[in-house]
Image 1 (cartoon, rainbow, N blue to C red):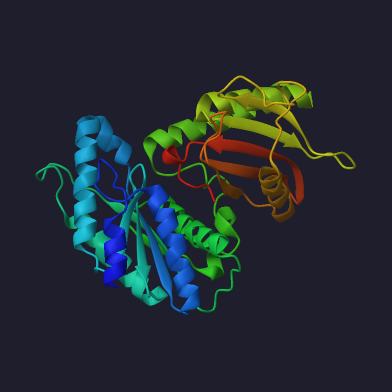
Image 2 (image 1 turned 135 degrees about the horizontal axis):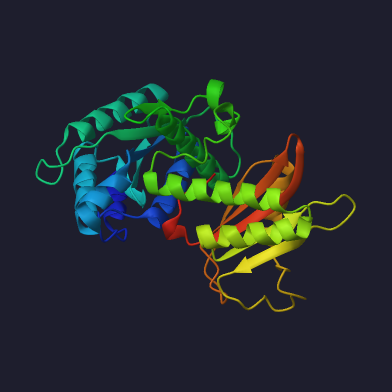
Length: 338
């Protein structure tokens, strides 16, 4: 235990909250997940998010918002055991890794933390907040195969639980339950992934939804729809790369439309609407098509300035996959959609 605490103290810290950041979190989660498999131990994960934090930034400004984040980080750290570890996952979301936690234990810890955070007064008593908490547990009954994909699945389940807490109105804790969440957020409203209870994100997501509807309704030409949709996604989300791959029976999958933050196509690309992918990224798209689920790949920056994380998003119509939307994004700015 002393060695693990020492290793945690060596991690690079986020400049605002003085906590380890998202990259360090993912590496630590992978390590702890592997350990839980080897030693047949449970592993708990929480994602904690103050409700409607965008309004805090609007009211107090960025400096005031950063102060609140630091105070939340301090409150979280004070409420945990030495063996538990807290990270700034991204924006105003905090992650807590709790080794050895059963489902009952993580539910108890999550509620204790949430009530403590809501009781606290921030900015010298001028600000009070409610919090949404999502949690999930890996235990000996989970057989997830590859260690990295197992930790990503744990993270995805925790993210689903947090989203369910937000959709319930916030100020609550939801622990991932296979009975209600095995099929994902699809059990909830079909628009559930769009509304996050964060005013700024919801505005942007609603804008993107409306833009998509406008594009689809304004043209019957598939290629025009694809190019316009990709252009508007690029303007709204601002990814490093976005491409739409169409599934046509009997034909190899090709990109129908592409947008790049760096305007130079990849070496060997015949035109600007062709995105050449490595075998690793092609496999990502194939898996999204095969499993009918969003797939995620962590990337390292390359000469094109590609982002740190890639998503392959299947575009579904009932049981059919019409195509795949591929996005490469800066890891530091985006929480997983997984």
